[in-house]
Image (cartoon, rainbow, N blue to C red):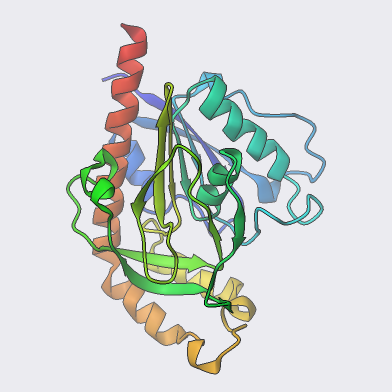
Length: 262
């Protein structure tokens, strides 16, 4: 089986591939990670040469798509690379949390602070996320039950990009996952996480402690101990879900690669 090549955009040390790393390796994927937090702020290139890889994976991070380039120096090169991957190189692209927001933005959709009835909504912790009818049929979630059990860690949301299909939703955030599959392009965005290990969750709480407790209503404050308890309890399920999603993803990418060769 010919090995595939993945380019991974990482934004901060703690939000790495997690359970995705061994899952990708087991599926025959070589991983090249660009960790923007360890790079100089003055990025000189316009985009990365995605033509040399078989897939692009964009991970999460504490920054926002609407942050200035001073706050988020790699934003423009990432957006340019994502657009090139989707529209020119036709490289399958997969985004998680911030990554999904970047893909949505690259597809022309708005990214904004998540609100409901005028109230700011942060989703932090473990939630059930129902699949839509389209999501049930989509190959990315084949072999998984609905609702998905996932980790949420976001305050922003996005419009459904034009031409994309909604795959998952929730009461507090309409667009939880989407697929864009047109004219040879393939891109998935998932706002939630399954790849976080319990160790990553513990560190995330430390890193984001001020942000997770910055709530308008004290009743919305998070319980750190409960999140950690859920992380330990759900570890095997998160690993299983990640393994299945990665297998489905790689199978799609490999099928497209074989078609190109033929």
